[in-house]
Length: 507
Length: 115
Image 1 (tube, rainbow over the protein chains, first blue to last red):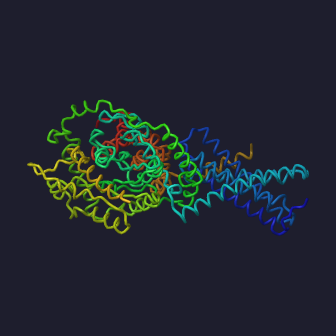
Image 2: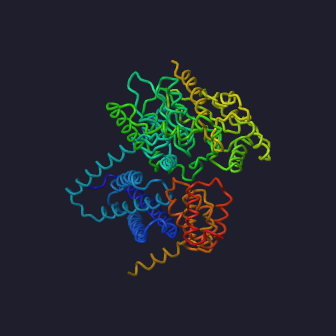
Image 3: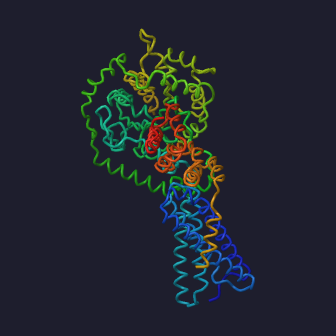
């Protein structure tokens, strides 16, 4: 059977495909060889040799395929199988894309270049093989059938991704929301170990400082509170603000907290861990002291388009399947739910061991006084001296969180820094800063934006300032020279959060 | 075998010079920066102190997954310019635990913990 492609189009397809393959192979090979000293620090010597050999082989195959295509075009001969070559290019591209998502994460440009060069070599090898094969009708039929099936699967996979992206753009939902890879890495780095004891209380199986989480059953309501070290807490579990809130509110409040994280990570926690629990409301706890100064490490990275397609956390076919599996797992756990799986181990003994929990005057400072003052002054300069540099990325994360929540109410709790609450500390910070400072600037900026967006906010600043100072002029709501709430601060925050949630959950 | 000669020549000809690696320390892609810092330690140890900032950044950036390699490579600037590493330890009280541990381990590895 003669190829059905017209004599003019067939050679052109082959030449264009071969040219693309040569370009991809040459670019990939050059990129890897140019960086081989650096890559040598990451891989074993034999792996570098194997990679270089593979890429040089790809380049040789692509060059041979290119020469064959041009020769065919120049001699005005009909090429071997232009449609098969085109179909193979599509199949290899999609298989390569999926293989990259599976094996070469996180996305880095150098691995993409190497993968593209390898895929080009695979295509060139296939094209040369097809051209060199004798035209046995039965074999050709079999190859054609196999190609048709592979092409169908490849197009369906790509089409599914396109359809999911279109659905995500037209109707944002928690199932289709995407975050990125860096926040998940940071969360895993700082997450507590399951069972790790804090003040005698073991973290749950997700590594959060709370009892075992469960998905809400139909007719039940629960709340998820997401934050950083304030959620992880530096008090016994019974004194933590989410526990205080839980008791006041009469509803379970799941406490998702990982130290050292920021708004980008809150989004990842919301998508991966909070929303599968089917909460009735979500509260994001923003600490103005450092959440506004946390740079989004993936912002303004080069190759944004490639990252959007070749980073696993951005590919919706992967994201949705993983999310559905998580929801199924939570539903299964709901069937065998037991409250209080995390057994309190000696929490009373801990209270006896740390008498400062009830008497802040007994607290021992975590940091040296001068170190603490320097830290607070740096933070004040960053958020009160000028508009915080990371504010746009905070707004972006909050916007995406609200989109992901859909009909679930999202609230934001603003946690002030200690210098905003304790007047003697503020005086010391102002004297140290050397630049004019606006004490409430972060709250002003955040509240303005949140009001504009219609996102309910609980500003703890007023609640904490309302606590009457002691004889020493201090309110003693933060642990001494530590920056985190002590038991008194947690109690104020927990009660205020309960009142806020009561409003947020009103029908 | 003769076909291998041009390929080997290509491999050698493609390699980056020390200056190109130094330029790459300012690349907008943090992975490229990390690669440049590691390469500089390997290829031009005498210029490794230039890579100190990027190595420390890489130790902290968990999303790159190169923290352990970068921490090991700190031994090279520690050998050339131990005072620079000691200065980092003494002037930045808020550095991450990972960064502090990596600096201390590098100084210990080259026997330069104390001035």
